[in-house]
Length: 323
Image (cartoon, rainbow, N blue to C red):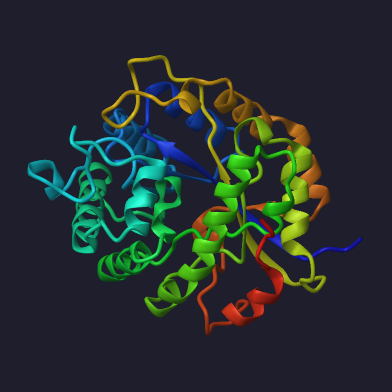
């Protein structure tokens, strides 16, 4: 069956988390399986990762981090709503709970984002190609507005909108992971307005919530793209992003963002993603599906009101996933 023409960017998250992670990411980039990376500037290996990005000319964005490790901004020097008593960010779920409870001071979020953007420029000598959010913090209510304002102020146009169509029906995901993916999708839908009002761009479709870690496979990636493309007219040019987390497993105590590497980073799942991404079978299937791999700057990425699909049009393509 004929499908829309798809140009796909593959983004490797968590660059700078640890040297072994970065080794795998660079391997995937050099193999042509990854087209861009997102750098954690508070990562333990951020400086060496930046050097790798320069050496290999890897398109690099900022992986804005408000949930793991230590801050790089003003919060380092005193009490902050972003931090726990030990001086670390509140964690993946802890930060979400604090945002929901109204306990996060949004000007402090803005200060940390600006500090991370500044640190990125120090490390790379230029602005990021894009900015997304570690653990999808950038689409949380309130945070998304501050995030969009900060990107507009510094002239960064590209971000990630983590809305994966049909993720609520992906029964291979464990219940907590599926519930988290659905909550991310719902937050992302609400963030579309603030992002659009501040001129941000993102790809027409996104996949990666259902293909993370052990769940990455040729079948799941191809299926996720097929779900995302349902209803889009044949022959239409569509842009897409695949979020990935390849790398070699971290070996404690090396890695992390100040607290050491987490369990996911130390697991075989990172290596599994690397193996799937660099295997010819995935790219043979995607080529058969009409998918062309592209770098971010080659994409005609979307901003509402321009020639690519508008926000209203995308609403018919990206329906909320059932819980």
